[in-house]
Image 1 (tube, protein in one colour):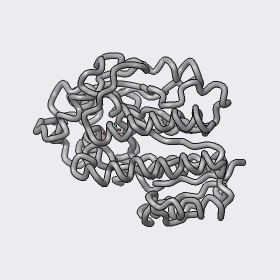
Image 2 (tube, rainbow, N blue to C red):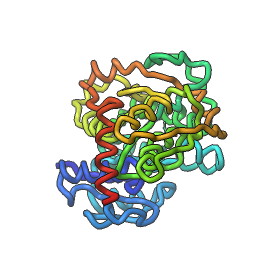
Image 3 (spheres, rainbow, N blue to C red):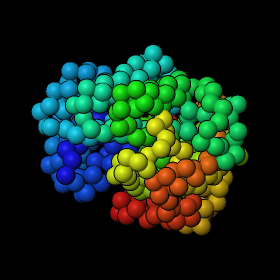
Length: 315
Ligand code: AKB
């Protein structure tokens, strides 16, 4: 069993990833860490350490103390928050990555997972069925940091032999963890508001189609790219990954099948410009061919599952 460190374990993906990895590899083999004890489930369900992802010495100390072999670096500022604090977003998103890559280069860890995003694409990228290799001119701080990060991952693999694996996540939707400052967050909020208020004011306008994925699928993809034999990983920047694409009115229509009378209104804000710069759909055939990725949830099955879980939580 590998000894694993998750940095940013209390965030939207980290919370569910921690539980999943603990169920696969054993609680004591998965060390969760974050800047603070932000999530009691994560903190109380196994070993937890407070760590600043910007402090190389702290990360190195944890790696040595727990004999860590694999690191999942989930700490990052997402697209909407990053636009409000560009300097800090660049610092956090890039330097935390360098720290972990440098531990790989020094052979102190064996394998790294680092998340990229559809934000690496920009307004000049083909919008439909966006290919793995295409024009990439991101127009957000977050996208620029993810694209630079991808280049560094590939460089560290090619020059220093670092085993780093990465996925370009679409918008992620989960019933159990709140989103953390992204442009796709409306697709989580809408389900909560459907049950509490029967109406939702969307910060994106009608017709804004974006690639999305249910968290269960995103976690399965993360676990399976990390488990894949090294020779199956042929892309060392980051893999396109897809499950479904929809616009706000399409989720609203699907929700209405379970919550009759649900209403959606639109009040686009600064996030509209970010959404407009991203793809509407993604070609993820390389992930499917190389390491056997396949998704389970579409809009209908995700909506049913989301509403069932959220309704049970309200009782
Ligand atoms: C965001 O909206 O910033 C994220 C992402 C697509 O990477 N969910």
